Amino acid sequence: MYTLMELGGQTLIDYVYQKFQTEGITQKLLIDVIKGAGRALNQFHRHAVHLDVKVNNFVVSPNQDQDIIAFKLIDFNASVLLEGEDSKSFPAYGTLIFKAPEIREDDIHTDVTVTRKADVWAFGLMIYGLFYNKNQNFTSMDKKENRYVRLDKELEKYRNNVDANNKLDRVIKGCIQINPVMRPSMLDILKFLNNKLVAFEYERGVGREDLGME
Image (cartoon, rainbow, N blue to C red):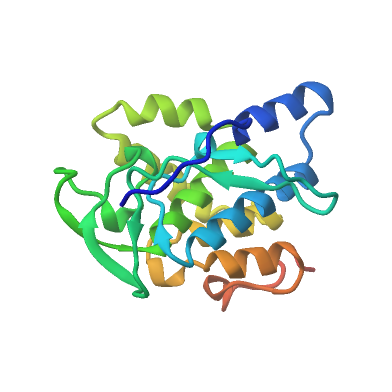
């Protein structure tokens, strides 16, 4: 896939770090950042799967308004055009540590079934890295042969932690569901963050107290 890439702009991680230096990090700031990045990815999903969603591939848009922090996606080298379909058989390139379980292959040139839900997994991992300051861990982990064993063990422990149940936790846990069908769409994530969706599909059967809703 060949796409014209808009250059320039401060990356998402640099933007968050700058805010941390000047104002400190709050959950509200992170939610606002995630809304902006989520809107960019949701728009991209109308046509394609990005396959390299991470903090360095969102840049602050020069066109800002007061209601939302606007971001643009960059780096489409791994992206796959869907051409009106929900999935495509295609090699999944991109950063290894951010690959969803269903698109991991020892040979990166092997065709896999690519869907938007692979981006949703990476989006959740990106939020997890921001919220829990794990980005340096991901960089280190990406270089290890047992990267997925270590990552999956950490994420399984996190998914099972009922005390991690604030708004961002619930988004992250939805994104990193092992079964891609149970992951929310980017549109549902935006609805949830804007208080237009009460709960995700994966939360059915989970008690209100476990969701922090008591």
